[in-house]
Length: 137
Image (cartoon, rainbow, N blue to C red):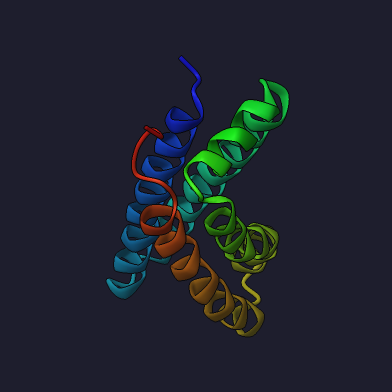
């Protein structure tokens, strides 16, 4: 059932899963396996995009009032706002970072990687720890 809590739980699982992919990509890079790094990052990009579109679609199309009520009941609207402060810019930087990596524009890619890393750390912390951990009573 698509309850607001299930949507939040799915978001948390997705953030953790793609973070594991991101860390795997960095391990591949550290091991000198640039091609593997790129392939993992393509998977990271695709899964992040699917999650973003899917969860946005569900929260906006399937009873958006219910999701708003849930955020009010759990007093987590501000936590979601903070999460979006990190996740939206990260989502906007991600395609440029993927493009610069695939086209070997190293300097720009590394600059974007630093910016993205800061935004992703904020996305991870706020998505996993700040958003509600259960259904409202």
